[in-house]
Structure formats: C-alpha cells, structure tokens
Length: 208
Image (cartoon, rainbow, N blue to C red; front, top):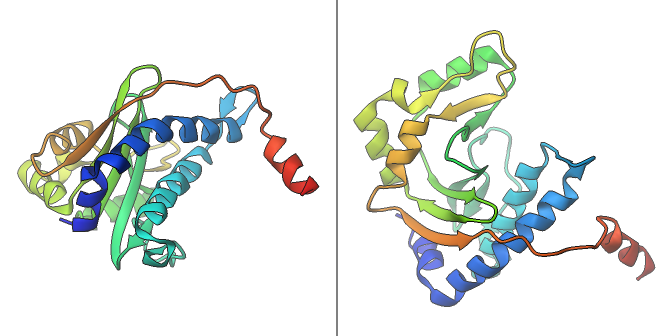
C-alpha cells in the first residue's frame, strides 16, 4: 500500500478540500466538455487532469510525472516513482475500463495477459446524491482477482460491436471497494449555479 495515498485519504484538511472542491471542478469539466447539451468523450481526460492536479497540490509537482510513454497504457500518472491508474465513473460502478482500445484482437490479447499491477484512484460521481472517491491498493485488486478468477474479473466487449475497451466486471469492482484495505471519502455531489460561458476564461486570457 502506498503510504502517500494513505496520507491523502487520512488528512482531515485534504479530505475536506476534496469534499468541497471536487464536485465544483468536475462540474466545470462537464461544462468544458459539453456540446449541444451532450458530454463529449474528452470528459475522462479532463477529470483525470483534475485528480493529477490534486496530487501535485498535495505532494508537489516535482514528485508527479505525467509525461508517460505509450508503452504504459494502464498508467495515468506516476507519484514518487509509483504508477497509479485513475478511473472515473458516473452513477453505478459499471463500465469501468481497464484499457481503451478499438481493436478486438488487442482486447482479447490484453484480457489473456492482464494482471492487476498498480494502485488505483477511482471517483464515483453521483450528481445530487452521495458518491465516493476511492483509493484501491494493488493488494485489494489482486485479492479479488485471485478469488473470483480472470473470467469473472474481466469483461470483454461483445463481438461485432465497437469495443472501445476492456472492462472490470461489476462483480469484481463491487467486491474490491468493500475490501478492508480500501480507503474512501464520501462526497455529496451537489451542483452549483453557474451562468458563465465556457469561453469566459479564454476571453479573459486573451485580454491579459
């Protein structure tokens, strides 16, 4: 278990900051990623950057590496030389991607060779109700992976469909988040009234 992430989830001042600011920042992310009332695929990357910025805020930019080679498809950030995977999901814990790919052959190949290999940060967004921010240690993932087996842990896309990626099963993630080694912060996902345009900040930057 990474002691630094334990700190993130244990320090009261940081926990309160996460509870208060994460819904606001994720709402801004949705606003920036929306077109004609629909949220675009880029929302995942924007949310990921918000979480990475939190790590930089708490631990210092010099200890966070984001410029990663494409040979590390599961790694979203490196904190103190340790790889971390970042996942976000809206609503129930389903559809969480282990890897994104549109290649069916690569999806099968990945599923055959996959083993949990790093800590995970998972944000469950539940607008207007309570959701969670989870720190899922590698040990918890391995425990469930070995308990239920590869076929029950990994969900491949249906044949003949646009695969988009390989998912962790609903059964697996529900067991994982209940593990005693998992840390979590409850978050009330309240929306705030925001009448600003998505272009306001850029207009201001052009004027500065």
